[in-house]
Image (cartoon, rainbow, N blue to C red; front, side, top):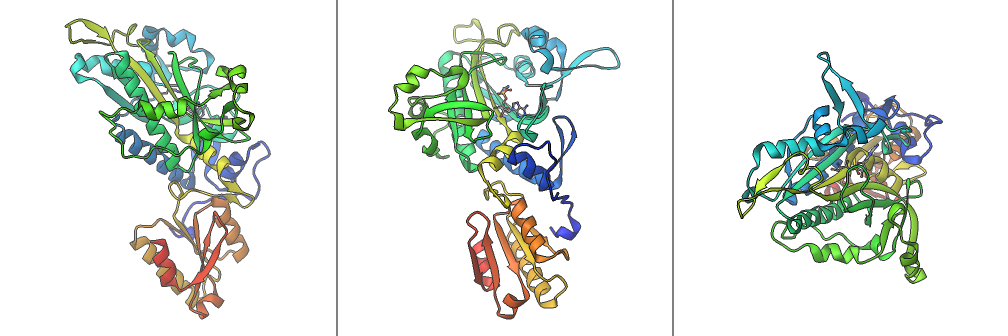
Length: 438
Ligand SMILES: Nc1ncnc2c1ncn2[C@@H]1O[C@H](COS(=O)(=O)NC(=O)[C@@H](N)CS)[C@@H](O)[C@H]1O
């Protein structure tokens, strides 16, 4: 993409109401624009990152055996009356009446809808287990939306829902999601710690939140420090028939709890050097809640003995739009964002230090063509801005690599490659740099 033809409305300063660094940087980098409280337009650069994060989540859900569908954003109030949540949900629910005076709502979550889809078609235990998921916009009328996309009112969520015949099966479904979450957050360069959590309006008695440690996190969290550096299990597992419980136990055996579930005595029983208390950002939350929805909504299957049984369910959420903020909180410096390569909006930024200089333009065009031919996403700053401004923009938007072409270097047959994360710069021939990048 040539910057002269792109749409990247970067800002010199962040608006004063942006308090945390991720909110400030997303606005300044021209990634989002607030259209109303807690409601954002996703500008081109921000949408590219959102799509990359979404795709990583999708790949890890598919790997774990979940099946993607897409549920509506607008839901029938009557479904929520069946589950008994319509009144309980409170002011966070955006309630809507259509022209025929039908009561609808903008879904804050989708347990009721997915249970309705399930009960309409699946009647036998032989069709279990099932895990159905979607990646869909949600609306929660937060009293105080703040911190940009971190706590929005309209936000993008992956929500998966599992259906099993019995508690043992439900635990296996829960474990698949627990392990898939360890992998998907690691792929985004995040250290997300699973912590025992409260179940709140979703319900059930088993729940873990996945927390990214960050000073600006809204949650106070307490955990054994070994959990932070524990590597993710990786993709090569027997996801369908394997026993994932040992991988889950490896983590749940160590103390980790959010504020609501914290047991001060148990935490203080740990050796002082092992205790970590911090603030964190909840990027995922998984729940196992038995028949909380299948009972009232009569989502039953015929069991092996011919009896009708309500299915055992769980739900598994990832804050897809919140993750942009979480990743920036975990990966930035004074120059701006530092995107992990897996989610960067472009792989390489080409900086032409003298646009219009035939030699520089030629080298930049050659680099641009070669990188694109190799399947790389390239942002070529071909504007006539000054060099310093170009560097500041590239550092701000946080592309992992900057390929810098200047008249002096070109005369010597070299270009410069800068690693955004380390700041390391190397001069080499264009061919050598291209060799390294593709
Ligand atoms: N207001 C919000 N803005 C941005 N992300 C949010 C917001 N509320 C929740 N999230 C994200 O969405 C994830 C899942 O939300 S949740 O309420 O915990 N879980 C559910 O809704 C379940 N139905 C999961 S299927 C959270 O872990 C968080 O990362």
